Length: 135
Image (cartoon, rainbow, N blue to C red; front, side, top):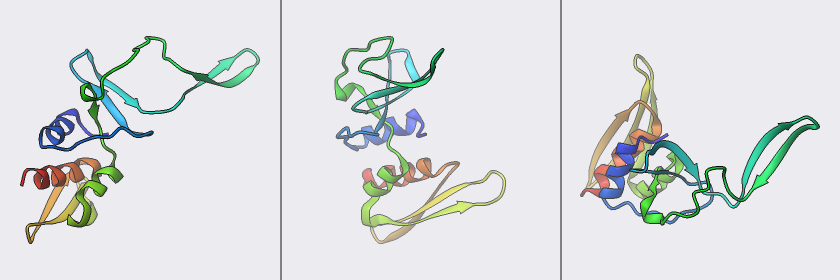
């Protein structure tokens, strides 16, 4: 999962979001920074009832956050979304062995080949995209 600081930096650098089903987001500055939300047409909850396990389809959650302006949400893009945002600049993703293990994303920016390393692939992609957006 992408760290909030990287998600903030991407938004501040100009990454825009058109919410789609399956997108993850956080709601910063409302004492819910540790909660991750997913855009979905339905909320499905697995319940264990005396009669057996059921999938309950709920329209709202227990704490009932009625609505939120999209601009107040902080998009937490997935690996595939970050790769798509890199577009033709993306060259390769490499898994790094050793201690600590991690990932490297290689991109071509302005004719230069650059490599971005982080502990997980999403963060490596985010660092590459952040550099691309800041140019």
